[in-house]
Length: 243
Image 1 (spheres, rainbow, N blue to C red):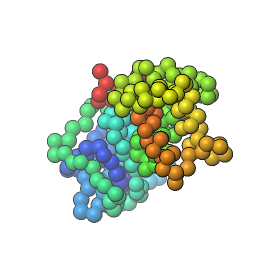
Image 2 (image 1 turned 90 degrees about the vertical axis):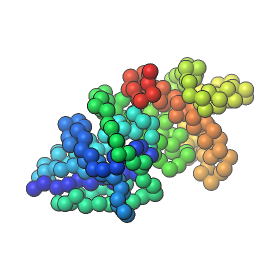
Image 3 (image 1 turned 60 degrees about the vertical axis):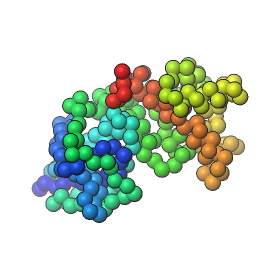
Image 4 (image 1 turned 120 degrees about the horizontal axis):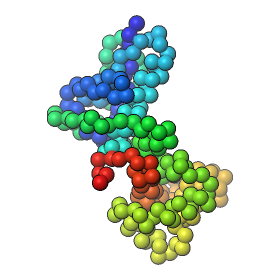
């Protein structure tokens, strides 16, 4: 028996203004625009008796969104996930995507074949899409952690990578930090990544403390730029702005 797998999407990515079929990782995905009280969604057809097909289908949808999110560096949040015999609709979330009648999806959009690169792209979508300053910050450090482990190694890599960043908000923040911080890598790792991840730390980030949130928000462009530099330059995964 065949069923439809439906995944509603809340995203800042452009979305087709009419139902559009795309091929990705050997699967046929159908993208639908929001309509009335129904959210934008992705659906695919699968065999209910095949448990592997269910896992692969769900994984394909998630990897498609991560690849698209990385390509355009825009968040894509998955919301309702359900199955039905007819292609039903799910309710809207907080906001819908910008729609295009001339929607175009590049033929070279693909999920990275390398497992670590694939994970990094997925973590990038997660970090951009989460509605929390501390956890977005931590998400970018998780990407660095995919390739590098251990505090000293990560701090050393950050300090080597900082002069190579080109994103203006990141370079402006780095310049400001340099006036008062001798070791920016140590600062970012200690007061940012560790303070968010470890509640037993004496310097834990308090989500009700505006000083903590404002500081992390100011440091966020640096954390994001570092993660994106690693994915693009060291893992070789291009996005639409790659030269």
